[in-house]
Image (cartoon, rainbow, N blue to C red; front, side, top):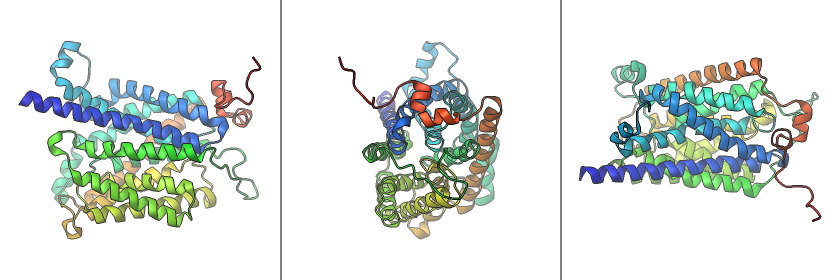
Length: 400
């Protein structure tokens, strides 16, 4: 029976890893649909190669920092650890690799390729696992201190803060250091729209992410005996809340409509195992509103050229999700309890601090050492031709 349980748990977490791996196709097509046609190939190549670099960084460095586990042993020894422990690495890797996939959307259309791969290695190897270990593996005694001080530890069931807020807030220094795309904002204050190249691709990316998110959230239980239908229902309700609020506030704009469910799902990750479904609906709705309002402010008033709006979508909605778990997880609001407001607030603030310092250090160093962005002519030609020497759609077919 023990062997059967282990086998079932291994299959369960493997399926979760595969579903989250598939979400990276969603990140790719969301970016492909949002950027201009001359940058579509670059979006596809970035997401795939970032995943490869993330795997190397997490396998050799990051996983050891976060969990104190390494793979420097013979295959016979690794097999003895059983398939579950090895597959768990795969599952957690897909979370770690989401960080550069998030950042990719913010820095799109003007970032150089090799510096971004170097940034991916440093972030997934060092910055992300540092906070991951604190939140999910009791590192540095911070969770124990929160428990002693406030009666509960910080709770982030599926990564609103650990993954999404970290990714969004790391992206912010990168976006600011890169600067806006040429022609996006004029010296006189005028704003030049860079409309999405393909709403169908954008929508496809959003749908792939949405479907994969039910593996991201539900399978964060990691073992079959801890699986919860409440997580699935809360994810659904938050998704719907985010969609409908973004539809209304975004005035039927398809970009807002398709990012609305993602905002809701980002926010519900942390407390999806604790909230009442009506609480999840509210959390998702607030996240949808937060994305629409802050994306508009970021782009139009503050003139921060965050192409896919990854800071409002992941950074702000992720932070809201961490805090919301401490509110709507309370029994007084229909939740299961076992969570307190102050640990959620403190650890969310800590994640933002680590992300901002880590992001600024990584991208600031790379900017000084290598440079971060394409020159003006390369940006005008587009990243596809400048970096990859090919376009997504050739202008003319050969005559033979």
